Length: 258
Image (tube, rainbow, N blue to C red; front, side, top):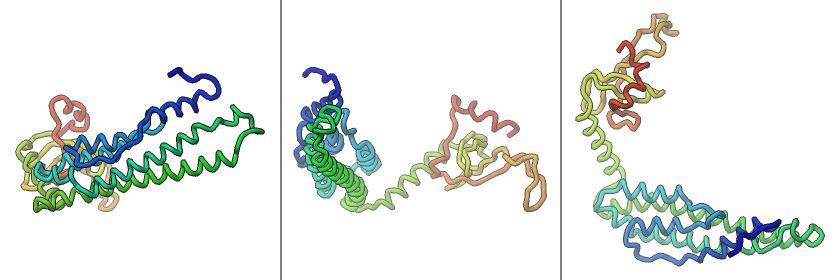
């Protein structure tokens, strides 16, 4: 197809993209997570409507974090599939209305005297409503994906809370094995800092780090602030991370004197 040129080029390109996009059909009995992701990613038109990335990422992240035996139940969740198909049907509805909008010449093409303002406003309103409904249905896919996580875990006799605690315990065990006295870690307290491990406990780690208020006096006690501080950081904290040889130099300036 020739590349549109002239005053109608933008509208014609949009119309071409919409005409080249086929309508979506419902998906049944997906074989795996890729089928679900592809079904949601297909809700898009090149150069007109981007794929719903947040929805896709959430579905994928939930599936990845699930126990292996729960993943097939998640992929086969009836409610999630129904909402994905509802979004695909709404996409078809929006695409038809967007196509009718693109078929109308702009005022620049027709001249304001010949421009059907009322018809254009009506089509624009209908397209806006269809787009809003599509976004609402995609939001429902996201909320249903969270529910599908719990239903998948229920199917194997588990729960979100139980799996969350298992992940925390796994992280605690991993860091407890990795960390030792003298290890350099970064953490948040509440700002991002770096420090040296003093002691590793069952669920936490004691860290010594340069006092950012060193050299001043405590506004409450009037005592001089020490050069260093110590704090207990939970081992399952998402902000606690051991620094490797490549990144440890980045923290050298805040570790001086430890």
